[in-house]
Length: 154
Image 1 (cartoon, one colour):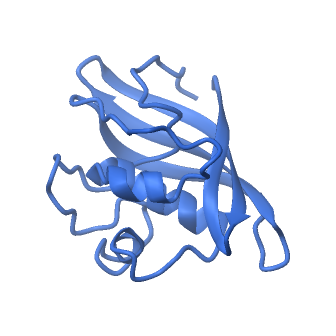
Image 2: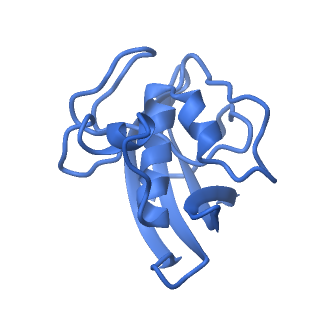
């Protein structure tokens, strides 16, 4: 496995990115989360508020896509109020390129919490890199929200 490289991080990030590279303000055709659906019908529905995530994995994928398309409003809306930052800043030269889901726990209709372990691949001026995180999600007011995550070295 490739060695994890350091990169500038937005405040307490969780995920982001793309099977299709995007630039700030552009809308991808393929969904950055990696599922075989178009962005508009996949994570775009959650970003626009037309649907809510049914599982922690779906929320994690949608948050990854939100980082890829730089949708700070959605990221803040899907963050638990106890850990939510005031703002989300995006590194201008950081582009998310691929998401791998490595595993998950909990998160069914009967669970109040769940985890998703993932590896997010990115590209920046210094070259390619990866971020490996185990994210925790809770139900808050009936919806799944991101609580926090532990980033580890590969």
